[in-house]
Amino acid sequence: MAMEDLNDYTIIKEGEAEILMHAKNEVFYNKTQVNNRDISIAVLRSFVSKRKQEHEAMLSKRASATKVSEKNAFESAAEEAPNESVVTDEKSNGEAEGPQEISQDEPCGDSEEFVKTTERRVQGKLKPPRVLEALSASGLRSLRYAREVEGLGQVVALDNDKASVEACRRNIKFNGSVACSKVESHLADARVYMLTHPKEFDVVDLDPYGSPSVFLDSAVQSVVDGGMLMCTATDMAVLCGGNGEVCYSKYGSYPLRGKYCHEMALRILLACIESHANRYKRYIVPVLSVQMDFYVRVFVRVYTSASAMKSTPLKLSYVYQCTGCDSFHLQPVGRTASNKNNSVRYLPGFGPAVPQVCSDCGKKFNMGGPIWSAPIHDQEWVTSILADMHSMKDRYPAYDRISAVLTTISEELPDVPLFLSLHNLCATLKCTSPSAVIFRSAVINAGYRISGTHVNPLGLKSDAPMDVIWDIMRCWVKNHPVKAQPPDQPGSIILAKEPVLQANFARAVASLSKAQAKKVARFLPNPERHWGPKLRAGRQITSKHISLLGPEVVNGHLNLEGREEPDAKRQKTEVQKEEDQKTEEATPSS
Image 1 (tube, rainbow, N blue to C red):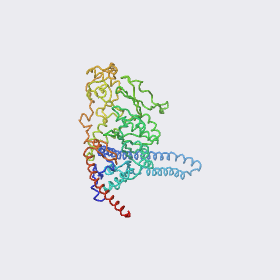
Image 2: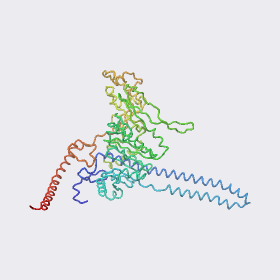
Image 3: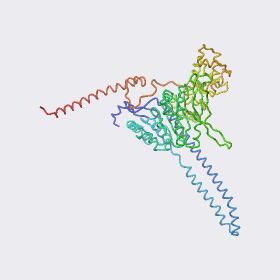
Image 4: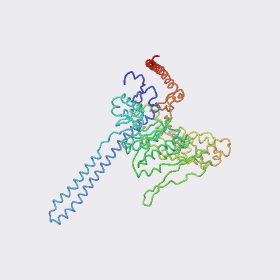
């Protein structure tokens, strides 16, 4: 690239990668996604480490199996040899020594050959993991993966836009020899590329502008067994219930507009990925699922097993949400039953999970789903990722934010889908809100578990049934009376019933999580204004985008266009003059 062209570009540094961004909005880049990229690098580092550990465990397992088979071969040879010698002695009258030696040598030779063959197969060196970034834009993510994640192999960056591919190749050269040797950029449709490269990539990263639904079918096919699929969805208005019918058409699930809608968005995305994987006798195991900023991001491992795939209905549930109060109930899609011979049968789930009207307030239910109701995190992975991050915090530009999110995730109840909002419960009853510590203590003293959620600072996950939750709130209202409300209101109907459980609001030991007790920050404010989604690449920036991008960005861009416009007009005028002159010369004089 010529030196004079550098004036048109801004150098952006993130982590150990640097990219050249054109002043115009030609190639998409969003500074906000530094959180997304940092957390992806943290997961990728853990994946490389876990993959190596799993490979070593497999080698040692196979080596021990080889030793056992070798031992069995020798034992069988020793048992067969005397029998053969006796038979031969009877038939040939003392000429059994020759055949006896042969009978001992033959199994030994077969065993040695078997051992050598197995060792050749087992001791195949573990190749560095290959990564595919399906929608690369400027290539910043691929460059950071290549430069910052040790032990990574080839990184393939795809895009269907010529300007993006040119920018990506320019940035690869700009980042030096390591990037040039590891990262390659291709102009291709990601769906076609993934379909034509089945089970070739250890990691596939999907981070589209909007919904990933059209890429999922090909993505689950291009991941190797035990590989990692990373997927982002930014169409939160659709996933959170703003357009339920659109969500159903894209993801195959109907969303509900509860306080838990962002966690439900995560679970809808997981259910959708599982659905696509099942079509190819594959299934997913979630490692980490995060809702941050304006998007959801899931990290899942993909495996192939026709028998394990049968358990999918056990991991999915429909959700019944009361229209009057905050009560919600889950209806599992499937269940299992054991036969007399201990074989497992897969059956449809028992239902209905709820009556026609809510038993708490008498209103009707909305039904949503199906959603992924199994755990959405692997706590062992989360702990490992956090430990790795703490040991190299200087290498994460967004360390504070992602560390806070992962800390909160590490304290979530893994087996409790969705959550309640304490403020919503109080709004239904029109009462003052107890502190989170008091409410948590009452739940714990009643014999149930409770935790926070990374999705919402006010959200509470608990395995306590809704009638216990409402009994606790009835006991709270008895001590903190409310004004009389119309008798047909949901709050009035709930409070009209006497509590079965007498709540104990004495402070429990576990009412604060470890992070809260140590006063570790868990929910951080945005680092700057206008920290959110950005315009799609190629769209013209105008004054109406001030609320999205900020006045400095918009005014700077408009000033740049203002400087370029007179030059363009001047060139146009000169060209027009030349054309007019040629026309006059060509016209014959009268």
